[in-house]
Amino acid sequence: MCHYANTMYLENVNIENAKVMLNKYENQKAKEIGCKNTHFVTVNGLDADDHYSTAYDMSLIMLAGIQYPLFNTLLSAQSYTLPTTNVRASVEINSPTLCLFP
Image (cartoon, rainbow, N blue to C red):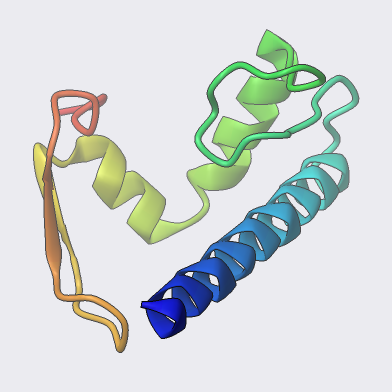
């Protein structure tokens, strides 16, 4: 049981470290594309202290996103299958929020 607990603790630390790194990357990229009133704290977009953006900055993020084919695919998809990786099996996402621009 101790081994399992240690493994779970290390996995949790790795996940938290990955979230921190992702937030730093998101904030850096937001500045690079010209966002002046955006600061990301959560990786899922849920509300948190010091997590904010403006409509103008979100439009800059959208304009940057549509430069990537996968982004456009996800915007127009009714479902999408994330491919298998070395750490998980493929995952199918069925969500009405995926299909923003049919």
